[in-house]
Length: 512
Image 1 (cartoon, rainbow, N blue to C red):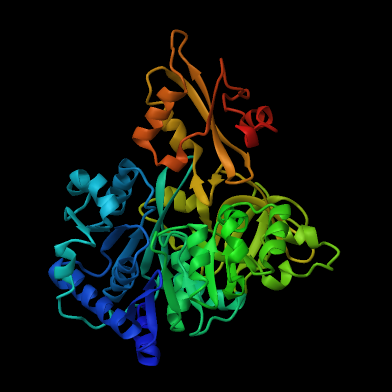
Image 2 (image 1 turned 120 degrees about the vertical axis):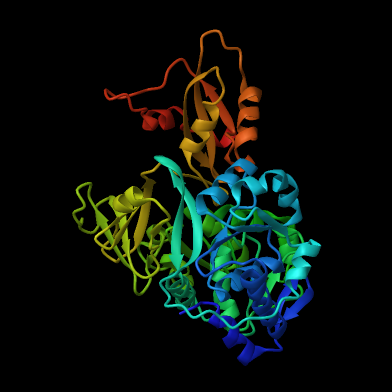
């Protein structure tokens, strides 16, 4: 099973259907898209000398070339390493080095910042900008036949991280991505007349869900801005019908609060699949009041993409259910083919209604972390993924998240891991200790707060710490608030009590 065979299928069935748009301008038909994919695959193998299993990184904003390279990698039997376009060059460098990527494709905005360092972190030293003459030369290669695979090979190496170490590459197989695509259909049917709008990053959930639209010959629309702008999305609804998109809860709220909604052809918006962060009950009710019941929630992890459980449109609309608010506050029920068990600290299954760690089993789960045997032994046990998320399953089978056992912060749908920020802060010579937490923020879901202990003679302030973070981290990871304290609360074993820090910030996050 090679997921790139879907390209062969769609070319046979829907060769002249529009494939990709940038704004309202058609870029390619599926026949043209398929030819570019096969040609790029040939270039990857013959011109760049890559072999099946080699890894190719993408540091790109949303653009047609992202989709072409994505499927070309799979066509050639290569592993895709998609990265967040908002990463700091040092963070990107780490991923390139850890993954062993031999080539990195980039858009101009990212390449300009990273070009001087690229050769240090790529095995072949090749950073190729998709707007360059070099990329155009690759499109003159001879097409190759799609590579035969078993389905267990790694297709997507997605980087995550935890509080116990550096980012880790989660290996998702071709079978896992196919499972994700097919489960999308259990949310709702997707047909040739449907359109997928890429307002969120292709390197994350939006890219995984796009496979379902390619399979059916649907239109794939990339905003001219290459990202999320509510007014632009509403403008596109004036041209395209049956449009669906993926977005974080913060994107949903920005959409419904934008003044452009008043004149939008909202009837052309079919579905918003949301996930990647907490959606408050009052917010989803307000969203449905503004644009109707056009929502499906998906829950998942980098280690198991957003089809672990789901809250369907029907569940969103079941207003007469006696536990309606509880349902809206949940992440729905497990998808068919996925098992979820709540376990205690010893790994024993817990009954309905009791809170514990969420464990997951099914084809959607990763095969493991790249070159991380100890992390694999901790996270993958007896065929189960130990998610690190804490929650419960009620008597009806609805899964509700309660906390993140790894102290993950989710701001605007983007993951922020406290240890990364803490380590950056500790590079300043005057910082003695640092502890980072997330506090509620209605617009972003959570915002980052850093508690910092400095040396006695230190005169550093917020601007100094911001500079440290700016030099080492992506902008979205920088704390929005700094609290200078004389000491951090700790238990008898010296562990920082983040629960105490959160209590100290109760009620102040919104106004920070």
